[in-house]
Picture 1 (cartoon, one colour):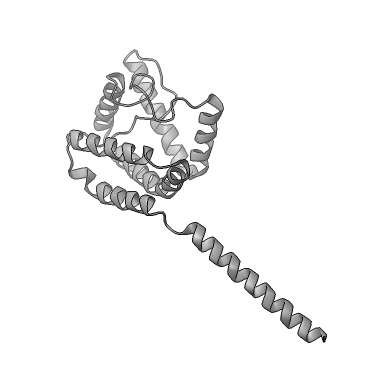
Picture 2 (tube, rainbow, N blue to C red):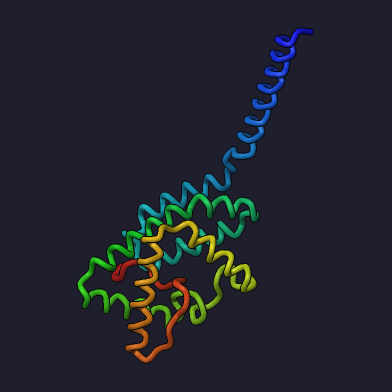
Length: 191
C-alpha cells in the first residue's frame, strides 16, 4: 500500500470519526421538549409582565417555579443556563431605571423594597423559604461565584451601589443591613 493510499484511508477514517462526533454532539444538544416549552412560556410571560398586577405576577412566578421544580436536575440546569442572560438583562434595565430616578423617587422605591422585604414578600431571612434554602454554605457560595462570573464589572458595580443605598436607607430607618440582593429588586410599584 502506498503512502498516498494510507493517508487517504486515514483521512476518510478521520472524517468519519468527526462526523460521528458531530452527530453525537447534535443529539446531546437537541432541545429537550419540556425545556423548550418552558423557555417559550418564560418568553411569553416576560413580555407581558409589565401589564400584570402584583397578584398576577405572583401567580405566574408560582406557576413557573412549580414547572421548573418538575424538571429533572439536568433540565433545570439547562433552563437556568439559557435563562440567565435574559434575567440579567432585565435586572440591569431595572437598575438603570432606578439610578435614573430623582433622589426622592429613589428613596420612595428603597422604602417600598425594604417594606416588602420586612413584611415577608421578598424572600430570604424574613420572606419565608427560598429555593435552594437547604444548600450548604459552600454550595451557596459556589452559586454566588457562578452568578458573579456571568455578570459584567459594570453590573457588579451597579449591584454594589444599589445594595449600599438599600443598607444606608435601612440604617436611616433603624434596621439591620442585608447581605444579599435576593428579593430586593422586585417589579415596579403600582401594578
